[in-house]
Image 1: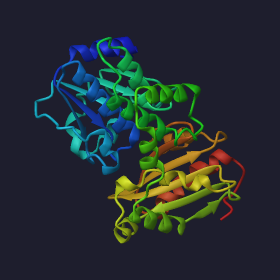
Image 2 (image 1 turned 180 degrees about the vertical axis):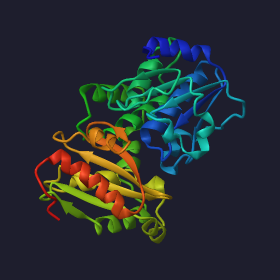
Image 3 (image 1 turned 90 degrees about the vertical axis):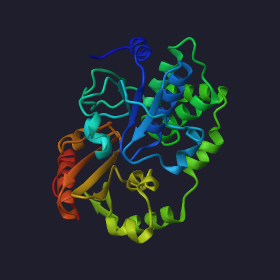
Length: 321
């Protein structure tokens, strides 16, 4: 059932030995929310650990430097920033059907948990996590928690550049500043530093650019061969999905990433096109300006599927390519 922040805090008080789940291919919001909750629960005297199918990318290591996961048989399962159990990944499939609480901000959330708090108006799940932190009188907003919450909000808003950014997002960031978060370090790590392999994969991605619908749509793709050739890791791809939309005149940016049996599609749009609706037609979902889906098959099959959906959105005739 849908619950309030106060009820969420009450549920957490009742829980013990809690596993916190983050989605596969983790980003700053799922990890920031997950570790923020872990540190909140720690102050409450609760045992918890954070789990992710793909582990924790090293660029986020400042959030878990002193983290030592405890071994215990979980009595409760909490999912953060996960709209659908399909996003658990194979390593966390054992928790499907067992989630007691889901904390999220995706309108496409499948309500798979026993209880859920889903705030669609929030730019990031970390914004909800801040309210949960304040919901416990005995919990102090430490620098440790502030670093995590700031990471979640800043990464999901593209350092406060994306259209999902609100005044509340900035207010949350301000409160994290006051709590001592190292925002300068976080911004540099998240938005400035790039590995040599990241530079190499960006170069290859830009060489795949295709334009469609009178250059209002740009498409790029990443194949497994490209990843192997450059030595890039999945954890280094955060932000790549935004690249097509950075091209002047592009309203819809499409990024295809090869998986074992198909292609993961990331869609970024302006206010004119609803990305979640387009991805929803292909079994995915997300937000109005950022959404994703998966299409089985080869590259040409995936291209055709997503371009057909975009064509319907533009509703003005043939592809120009």
